[in-house]
Amino acid sequence: MNEAIDYQKAIPSSKRFGNVLAEGAERKETLIQPRAGVALTNEHIKLLQFLESEGEADLLPTTVDSYTRLNRYTEAENGIAKSIETGRSMLNGFPIVNHGVEVCRSVTSVLKKPVQVRHGTPDARLLTEISIAGGFTSYEGGGISYNIPYSKAHSLEKTISHWQYTDRLVGWYEEAGISINREPFGPLTGTLIPPCISNSVAVIESLLAATQGVKDITVGYGQCGNLIQDIAAIRALTKTTRDHLDKFGFNDVRVTTVFHQWMGGFPQDEAKAFGVISWGAAAAALAKATKVIVKTPHEAMGVPTKEANAAGLRTTKQVISMLKDQDHREVPAVLTESNIIEEETRCILSKVEELGKGDYAIGTVAAFEAGVLDIPFAPSKYNAGKVLPARDNLGAIRLLEMGNLPFTPELKAFHRTKLEERAKQEKRPVSFQMVIDDVYAIGKGFLVGRPR
Ligand code: 8ZB
Image (tube, rainbow, N blue to C red):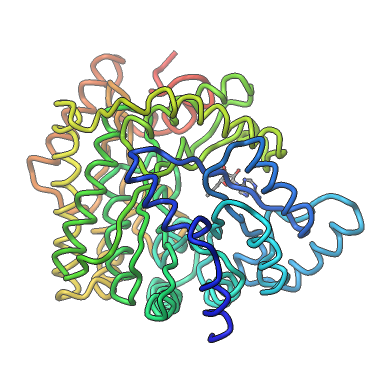
């Protein structure tokens, strides 16, 4: 620990993730960040340097491979060996645990920009230890957001406890004077998630992190596609997170936001994919998100080449720079939508708090059991799976099945009315077919999945 603390202390301020975010927020400038990771160290360094120079990235990632995410280190080792043998990456990310602390330092130290670990690991305790000692200054994930959308059989009690370990480790660094940025994974399953559900999870994970001593949190949200709803969601997310942290005495915790460009199915045509990317860039800029996570024209195909990755970044940079002087957060329609999201989120969070008798960790487990928290399309057997979303007539995401979400009768009626408007327009009843049509719509070139 002491050696790692000394190593972190020597990292210049311009390369500390939290500082760069805070400076961007101060300038009201949306920063851009890609996803990227390959198996071998030299290739990974070249990839990140390319995204820095040719992609104009403000912030860098190291995306971890799927074996490491599942703690399958022997298979990760075989992946490294096969990559050396074949001369191409046989893993879908950089296996941080197998490479170890010194190799991680050789990556993080050679770059100009701050680097964050991005993954999807239910039990990330060892990965966190190695990552922070390895010089990364930001770390993604949380006990809910890296469990329920990612896994079938990990219990929430266990993953919340595993992530309390990660957050406590970050808290320990904080107490030694080193700030490590933490980012709960906002988009969850990335499939038609209503903002109130992702915002609720983001607030809970922020509270759980702050409880363990985390001081710098970036809360996230995945683009829905309706501009008003997207800006409102980021506005509500900022407000609700701040309010809840303050309520529990965490006034000294810094909050920034991340907007994820469309996380659902993409068109295969690269030109059309750039259209989707641009629309996400516009929404992020108009919402004044602190940073935007950028997609690539290869999204429908798989892990992108470095050229495709840089192209997504430059497309985004162009739109962001053009919109930097426009701020749509106080537009009347945005305020109306933001108030609805805030009210829905309040309903969910106060029920979680009640179920946990003031303890959000206990409340979260009880809330998932009761379906008070319910993430659409999640694979986990600990998720009720009763909630079904669909788009309204303007493409905003509403709820067709509300399961056991603790909404007021007025909120329930609001969702029903919105979907009835669409049903009338399409001359078909509100039904599961709408859900299916919406899941595939963007890949086919539309936002709302209308009947042909
Ligand atoms: C939950 C995040 C999914 C997104 C991208 C996927 C998808 C995963 C890599 C990557 C570049 C990688 N992703 N692994 N992008 N390099 N090694 O994360 O394409 O967009």
